[in-house]
Image (cartoon, rainbow, N blue to C red):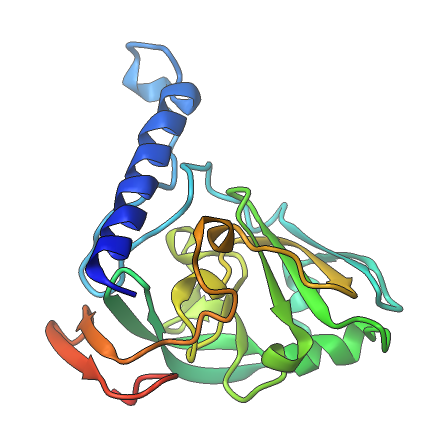
Length: 232
């Protein structure tokens, strides 16, 4: 994606954030009444991105709703999610804006989730819905590829709310807009829809392309030489 498209995305996020804050911030001069909001910010090692400012999700009250074309629909608490067989993975999340961050993630594979909820044969896509009203469609085929991962831990700690806690998806071979954060709902569906950023012209596939990447964790710029997951 060229620099003009990247800048357009940055400007769009900034506009949405400022617009939303004007409605979400309490109108009070008392700083103690101002609620904490998760918002876009650049950070050393791993930037923070949402499509709009949101209140942090309380992990103790959070539930994951699973529905659509599967045998075991329902609501799953974080405690029940953590009872699934756990895996560890080190992988990089690469943003279409031209930066990336790498971490050690704790969680489980999509196959582990599918084994528990039993998708029906006609289910071809999984619809994701996030706490900030973000949404995305990802094919079952893509979800079952190696190194796709659901994470509830980051660097041996509970996944921070700024990075998508209590639960997020990671697809290291695709740009970060496919690695859905702060997941609230999953629906197994037959047909693909248009994800949030794809309605603004972004690729539905989202595969990382060759180019320059600012690896924040390494504090240097790297050259991505081929499609897919970077090898650094």
